[in-house]
Length: 591
Image (cartoon, rainbow, N blue to C red; front, side):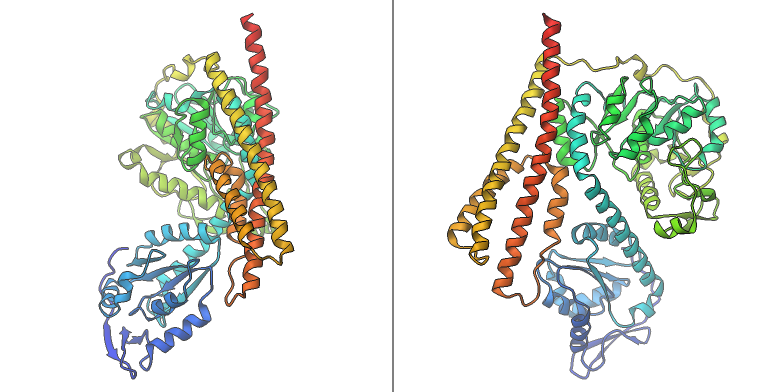
């Protein structure tokens, strides 16, 4: 955090108990009688085991000492101190702060960027289990910063809840989609092959309400720009007779599939990650481009291994438009414009005309989705929600990450929220400035519909899948063995005797070896999350209660692994059937 401007008078004084106390602008932040006793009293009422603790105001560190004395391995502490001079004073009088430990972080100054980053990581780990502790009078001294701390905490909590709901909702579907889409992806093209191959302007069309007014102008530059359609916007474009140059689709759910199931779009090249709904690549018989998602590291390794190539990476985001932006920046060296990117309920509408998801907004929906007002494109207040806020932050973070290429980014939505980092100009101004000449034939036009693979590559693919099936069967067998061991422990009053521990340990070691390859990453995430956040250690836990808690946690883990593996096993068998059918066809063609 940046150093705060000097506007606070800082004084130290001796307390009645001989300890140093502190005044800031005439306000005591520690007791003038006994700072330590005061700190212990505050922490006693605010400390929560297995939580993320946010301390607003370091002072001389008395509250930090009291929190550290109570902290267990399952706790974490973020300390916010707006004044660097106070921080340096605390280090002078409290040497314990220097060796405070890895699970304690400091944010010094008024720039909350590092706080947001720490909070994001912390909320992922603790899933909303957090508490804010305030050093006396800091809220009076820094009312705006305290309010900002609360707002950031609330926003980050809402985003983590949304992200976690997504992970839970789609974990099974992502695993199923991923496994099924391997077949289509094997003959797809690599999005990386298109990097830097264009210099024409790119327009990314999203389905916000403001898109409707831009469609006539977009239709007129069909041959003078490269149009990327973000997901469900496809219906709005086709309805107006606009065929995009590329459609990008990401979502793995049924609603996304419904946007595509009734249209013929095989003549439009399509880009997608392997978690997209498995029905969409199956519907599409044209040119396909696959890509890995930047933060899906474990599965990216599997994708590259099974497809026998480096599949290329696209930056992650909260919506298909975020992915589309990174793809656009990779494809062209020219300018990139967003249209229909309202990220708000413009005119109380959810989507543009022609979008299957279009609906109106009433007070009930406003309350249900926890909508709120924020700064709009033209400085006005517009209605948005936390889902849109996540997308907006994704765009803004991306803009700040592209460095010298930031000048190529334009928001021409002419409505919705203001997206910091993008040049805001009317769409007509963008068109008149950059869309003047017909674009040349692109590399996409010259590519065949499918990336032909040799018989040897197909056979290697099939054998890799077959090996995965065998590993899954071994995991299922091991978890069944663990179930018998757990039954014995339950019959023994939840006592983990030496023999049971040894047998459990042996099974765990074998399972670790099989699970180390991370192929079950998607489907196991909710299981691991549930295990981490349930059956938590309690204060003053008895020996019997501790054994029961460990038993329940262990049982939950292995049952979750077994059920998830059985599901993934069924997905792999379906893929293996497809590969076997493909082998028969290839053998028939040879003869």
